[in-house]
Image 1 (cartoon, rainbow, N blue to C red):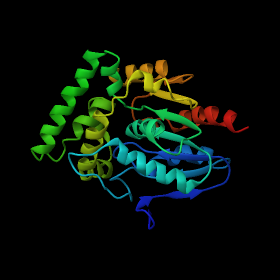
Image 2 (cartoon, one colour):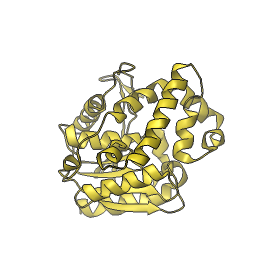
Image 3 (cartoon, one colour):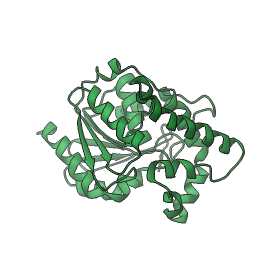
Image 4 (cartoon, helix red, strand yellow):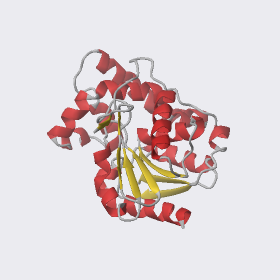
Length: 267
């Protein structure tokens, strides 16, 4: 439910080292359930939703969203947890976690980033061809949204998951995607503008696990490689038969990798 103090979805249960789960675009805290069930006996589990999703209020103006707004949100959540916290994040949540790690006040103890998508690193690293794939997608998506096409986000889902992914989702999920497309446009606007230099990534001094799907989009595959090459000590793991939506398709694999990353840090 929405927390009455600051209008942010916040669920907190269990005891032990704190894990904060950040979902991606179109996601809510409930999307981590299968992973959380494998970890909840040994960890304090905190779930939330990013701005505009679940019970978290949308505060960003359309056309002027920034990553600083997500950073402020994550700072508030970490300060409410009031304990050393390991952040687990998917997709745009991973981008938000990176932005927060760079810009935020309250730093996490570790990061576990699942299919994080800071596409700006492609342009920064000179991967112009892959970046242009992302650029063309963005222009078409925004054009369709502005034209009032209700399923404009179908293009985004199929970009990440492959052709037919949107249609394969249950009707309830498709309806939610349509309902929250305006918030995803805000995600997209703020995420596109996030382009720190490679030297900024090299200043991250937090243990970082990067997880990608082996059947993901080439732009996502390369983004994970660039993050691993530039975040000191980062570990890159690939779930070979997975794609972008790993929390739904490979929860057991994710739980194992997250546990293996976090547990040695808390012993």
